[in-house]
Length: 121
Image 1 (cartoon, rainbow, N blue to C red):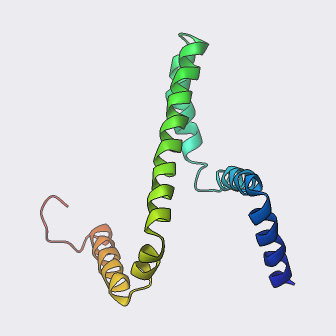
Image 2: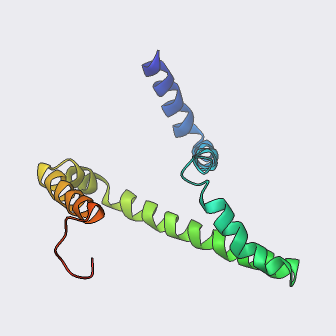
């Protein structure tokens, strides 16, 4: 059942490429409603809401620049990861990268729990 759906979607996206852009847009819109985003809503509203007292056009401009910055950053990340493609995939599944990531996370875990003798950490 899933294989048939995948084949239908591949056929649909290969013949109608604009649908991929539309589905990506709505997928990104849905992912922006994840619980990870909720703490940033009051912070963003607090920053942009400060300027609503002066003028609505200034608030619009600030929110536009904010959204433009986020869109530019994530677009550049997507372009870089798409251009690296197979190389990035091979790098991620390499056991050495798992080991480095594990050591990195273990180090920060020790810092979080206060097991560090390193000054200024």
